[in-house]
Image (spheres, chains in turn purple, yellow):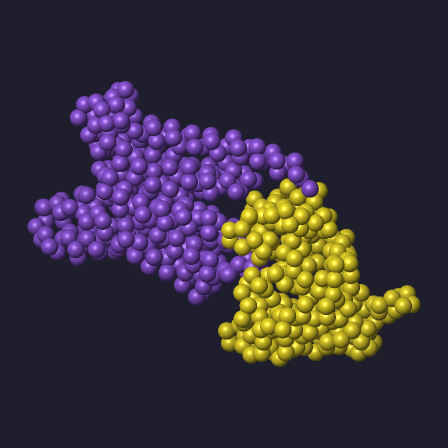
Length: 345
Length: 267
């Protein structure tokens, strides 16, 4: 037996995990310390412990910190959702935006806003407050409906990974078109904030956003230990995983539902941030290599790092007119995907 | 350990793939399923593994209807190995055997010393422990097949259902796998059902043979009885005869290759 090899891996693990916790902390710290308004590090620390000028405190505590934390949480949501979808569909290209889940969430939020807010505020130039508390839950309904369509296609017609993905793309494109049509029909001032949201943005995300999203994060992550083994088994042929003792349909459905809830609730708060769910699991797998118990922890850490650093780049590069995180991830994600595909081939 | 079914029929949509199939596994023995392509061998195996529900009739595992058992209960008794199974690309031989402990450890329980011992034993007895840390993708066909069989052993299943375990392997690996299967049945008392294409290998390795034709069972007896009739010729639509190469050894089917016999036949 290769006891020696196993021990080596354990030793590696002991080093790798603290290294990643360190990197995640650095990414978070950078995002809090750096920004469009230049605040000296000493003042940032002072603000964090409740001292310093009122202006610095307002920028750090009320603006930057919640924004960074929301980014961190949605990063985890999208990355884990992508990891789950890639495992259960056995397709390396699966991701919440590709499978139509983000679009389902977007459409649900669009329809909800139309009926709840805008019907009561017919004037096209007044900008109504978005009903924050409802957004994650409403988005989840849309995401789950899209997930149901995926489930029906996977089992009803017994599609293979490739055809399943193509159907997901088609469903997503249709839902996206309807959502865009709906939003375009609203006119002027309302469009602006919705378009910002639609491109995936962390602009002006507050403690309220974090408060309404966090319950879904806690419940979702608490499910992970339960689905860890099934997720590995779902990557076999279903006849193999069932022969190993897995209730295939049950665990496929649970994992799919979890991925939908995580991705959709994040869409509800930050809009569809594309490519995070697609790229992060690949990066994690690439870095973990054979140690595949580490893929999931890496996915979590990289989800945080990618979104917080991506948002930092967007904030600093754009100046006053910042670049939304969804645009940053798309710009960096596409070439990165090509590199990964080449390395895998 | 018992696995049996009587008069099960399987439908794929409108098409009936298996008609009134009867089967009874003898403990510790090797049961071969032979028949032309599309005759229902794989379908019968999957039905016996509880993977497809019969349109009529039922499969009984240890005296219980298999449809009333959970997948984990089934997995603790029986392992099914499909033809050319695929695994996650980065998975190693040892990790595969670990996955097979799922039926025992479940969703949350950690792997105890008993599990570790069984995994090591399974790798050892299939001769794959030397490359336990290597990826399945890097292995030769024969090594990979042994790795999959070691997973079935780690699962502690007393019944092994194998779908054409020797297909796509060269003759050297075919003999290696058949030897392993034979040892498992004789030394460990594992009961084996396998679909197999080579008639002569089936006759020499199996204790009992079922012959399928168009989804119907046309023969179910000891291998020697198969030599006593011309079913092999009619079912596979070939010409040939059974010969005894050395006294006491199982009969050998000597096939006439059509291209040669065409010219030889008197016209």
